Image 1 (cartoon, rainbow, N blue to C red):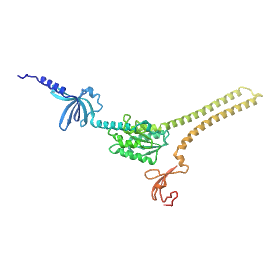
Image 2: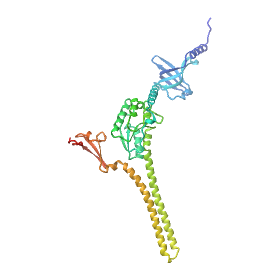
Image 3: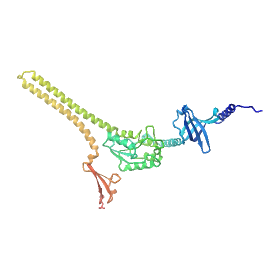
Image 4: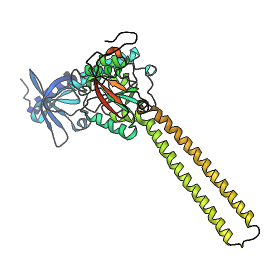
Length: 402
């Protein structure tokens, strides 16, 4: 004769059987329903084309999730089946949850990173030195992005004399890595002292093109010193690992380049301040000495020693004047020396000697007459402005006119 069981009895058997015989599992599924309860628990329904599975994330686990679940998201969850006896339903208790797409991207990222490290492409010893006082900086970024404006503000504030050459590129979306390579290649025509490759922050998908293997290998062989400033401080792409210096943001990349120029400006300002104050203090001291002499003379009657006293006063004034003059000349000489050094680096100084810069309509610097042809349009930069011109003929060294 069969035993008569209660509903609780049979449910307890189901619960014991289910939780004992089915081990913890990792499941890939789409979230079709998701409810955040006031208790802190998260209730959801997982599905695939053939079935649905009720699931729950208890409050303590929910507080530790790094990915916020949402309807329509494809996820990879880990947990164990359980039976909720009061409702007679089984559900999957989720112990960890991650975006399935991001999970796969992370695996690809780690695999490529390990591969390039093994090949030595991330080694410190192969990285090029960044110039301390660059006068020409190449920039590869979106011409409409906020990153460009942030960097321009840094240069304007700290090193306005530095020449900037923008080679625009797409920095997001499929195919962006190819445009970055083309932009870097274009900068070889003007050969800046250092190059910044930058874009603002975003999700892992937004930054993914900077994890492109082809781009990474191109940068590894790039002949110019290159600084990356991609995303936020917590973002590190494959390109960051390959570059010669990784800055945490585009702004920090520009600040890194301007750091030494900023120190030069500060030093010059301090010297100017010191020179001015030294001169003022010296004049005040001599003024006080003259007043003391005046009081001394007025307190005594004129005597036969007046001539000698006048001679002594004149001698003292002469010595004071020479001391002030020598001090001022020393300070002025040091100031002029630093000014001459800065001026010698200025492109305008070279242009004022009668030289000019000639660029084609793509703003590429023309270094040889061989690349020109009759009727080519060019732009000529003088020290005080620019003008356009058309090539009528040319003459190579040792050849006839064309």
